[in-house]
Length: 309
Picture 1 (cartoon, rainbow, N blue to C red):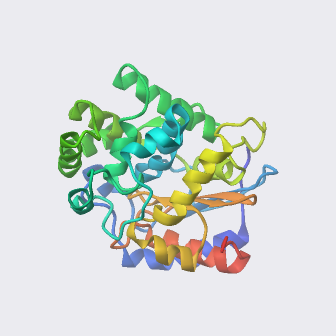
Picture 2: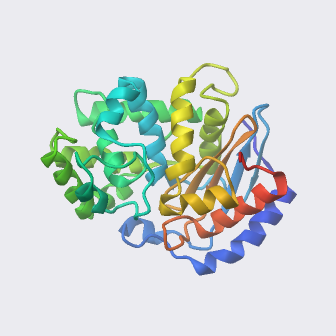
């Protein structure tokens, strides 16, 4: 599907790009240190197939925490809401995405929601498959269908970098094992989780996945149902309440759309029944969100009245 450069979107990207100087790339994952903090690109996919873009939208980015929405949808399709939410909760948290604090405070020590690391690890542990390779194939197949791109894979370099430095995620897993939330070998789960986070795609792919969520789970072009409508509703609700780490409340007030960010600088935005948005800007604010990407979304929301509230 062709994507055309837009003068209006280019002007907004140029304005938002000024904010990149106030952020920094995620240096705690060595492979992500290589990104140019001044990059900013965006794509918007409409239901009629129109796509507009600005910046280098063909540049590959890793999903990181954006993948949490997609594995949640897959786990819900595998098990249903009742079983999934026996292991992970529904509630937002004001703590950082990698915090262990709430696990210690709440009984039965299950993660508060699927968008924090502990919750995402619990969800990934539920992905069906006999081996790590088989489970990864299922995740990739699902992501490829959503993006309409069978070439999507993962970055071995980023996955290896994350796996080697995943000390806190290991601690979260062992804590949850103690309480029966996770019931598999930790190193295997972390291998799957880090490869899931290292799935890479372009802003165009990200916008197209956002469009699937905007269209209640249907492929926007073939109309094939890819995700059941009720599961899309659950995922979009989590994107509103928990999708931007512990900045979700301010994001809801200022921008007001379902969205999910990742520490690679990616943001997937969903404007229900209107379009999907993919953004890449690796300079992050102190909460782990793309600093220029947030500014761009704020300008888009204000200019085109995107807020669902």
